[in-house]
Amino acid sequence: MQGKKEYQEKLFNNFQLSNRVPETNFYRRLKGILDLRFLYMLTRPYYGESGQKSIDPLVFFKLCLVGYLENIISDRKLIEHCSMRLDILYFIGYDIDEELPWHSTISRTRQLYPESVFEEVFTKVLAMCVDKGMVSGHSQAIDSAPIKANASMDTLELKVPEDELDEHLRKVRALSSMDREEPHRKSKNDKSDKEGRSITASNKELSSIKERNKKWAKDQDQRPGAGNKGAKYTSNKTHYSPTDPDARISVKPGKARKLNYLSQLSVDTAHHVITDIRAYHADGKDNQQLRDIVQRLQRRLWQQGLVFENCVADTGYSSGENYAFLEQRGLKSFIPPHGTYKGGPDGFTYIEQADHYLCPQDKVIPFKKVFLDHRTKTKKKAYRASSKICKGCPLRDTCLGKVNEKQFSVTYYREEYQRNITRVESPQGRYMKGKRQSTVEPVFGTLTQFMGMRKINTIGVKQANKVMHLSAIAYNLKKYLKFEQKLVQSGMGTLAFATWVKSILDLSLGASPRYQKLAFHF
Image (cartoon, rainbow, N blue to C red):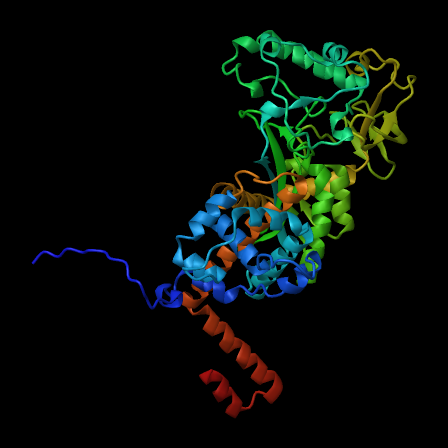
């Protein structure tokens, strides 16, 4: 006989969430292992003693984690999503008839707590992974990626110097027809300060930007997508974002210019656990930020009882200063040097003991001085030979060119470069390169595509740092539960416990036959 289901709401119902959420459910398992009660003491200084009660700090962090676990970056959509999920309601401690917090409460509370609170939660979750044996600590892979800021290229404003704007435009910009016909849209609320709105570039930099703009403007109107405001040439030297002054213009090869933040990520190579993450301005270089990353990472791993030995990164982090810094910290660098690096002119031989070079004709090119390169701001060593040495040399014309004496400069950190190159080209270096490509790059892809980090939904670099920490916390928790499930299924947890009990018995009671039999049964 055919059945037909008719629905009619009941006035009274006996319902318990705990009975409806399976034991194997992800959020039920997460609720069982995640203890955030320390947040009450940690966040107490940021509240007053009177007034209306705010959202529970535990509920706030759990809601945020749900957003990144579900790949939802909108607070409004997050609340709507949570209200329709029984397992999420059980995880955050709400019943089906309780009203969830307003979406604006999530945003205000995120702004209320400083970055240190989010970093503390990240460190607690990392400690859980360390206790579970998921973090080795000795090898860390570091990489960066631009993350889109919550600001549009359409709102960009020109930085204004002390002279008139029209005169400034004639100095640094070549106006295309699009600029004359459709002036850029002014921002309703300019959040930048006076320093952010002022020109900081030198006259030489402005002249270079002007030439690039002239070349750009010649065929701009004929380019595909020329009607897009983001199509015209822009620079952080001449433009700023009034809606998010901390966002910076950056570009990846083959992609359009965007306002971004830069995410610096460190991943342990053992089980791909994130050990450090931070937001930086997108106009900075990777090699300028490595020192800050390593200091923070080494301190955090040391607090967890782990020893950091190998620093693995790509060529963007290469510099002599970084190689020397890592050696001072007792770390081995596996960072390929730039393709432009040379240990000296082609055909010249370096004599380390005497600190001089021999030319192809075995003439000595002695060391003269150490100086600071005005362009790159790096230390270099100058070598110069007397013009008398090169007289009558058959290679003079090809070797000297228009000058009368042989002179060149080499990086001050040549020895550090050579030691790093030796490590990179060794079998261990090739292994580390494969480890980096299979470790940190997939983690970045997971965060940006599936863990809510495709776009920063806040304003300011401090808020962006909170977003990145929350995404990393969600990632590590997901890794933790997956690792724990594998241990249970494989029986590794039982074997490890039996081994631990046996070692305790051997140490405390001795290795007598009676206790060996007891240990065997364990």
